[in-house]
Length: 315
Image 1: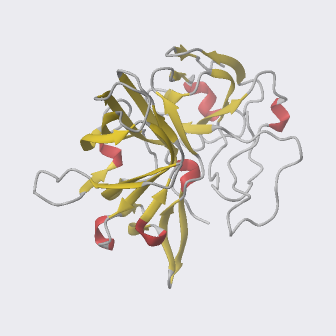
Image 2: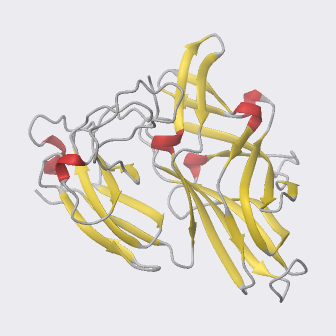
């Protein structure tokens, strides 16, 4: 299976209060923007956002159209790769939502199939969604002056090519790897990888250089494994050994600078590991890649509320 290595897409929810009590009469004004992290094997990842649907725990549905674009289209066609890091594109502004718990956020994609696509080394490929919808997780609108969330997609898990023949072709986005983080407490992790590590051992200098992040401290490094999705219909039923640790997320390393970065992480204890041989990490199948590689390149890190932590990998 072929796939694109895309690290992170984030969808930010900026909420400001316009109601005072924590009940159904209280409301907040909501805005949404999208952002992305660097990608190494695609030139464009374009999505045409049409509507956002909010579903409360009591089943109440609120469906709103995204802002018109500058040309007056009733959708926002965004190339995610134009908005790396802290850059973002606003797709919905000043939408009022009731205070309370929401069990699901659904992104509706424009039905015109030509508007969403991925350009890679093989040309233009369709980017499609079942029923033109992408169903995400839950969040809560609280009775606070300001709330801010980030919905983060690890596209190394979520963006998958289904094939190139008949109806089984093009790319899809899956909710696997999606997390929702409260921006008030969100942490970040970044650093630099020594360029000498790119060609360590049998590694090839310009391929396979990735940083993986795992939940927890003092993990057995021999049990750190690559991405896989056992719930996917095409999973080949060859999982890693029992007791292995799958990645929370992963990202590519900039070969020109050695920089890597993770944004919008929940605070907590993590293990960060570098691999110079993590090429062709299939998002569905377990590939038995060597992580860390070299074997010494892993470290405990603790991320506190709203803190940026720097960890460098040195030979």
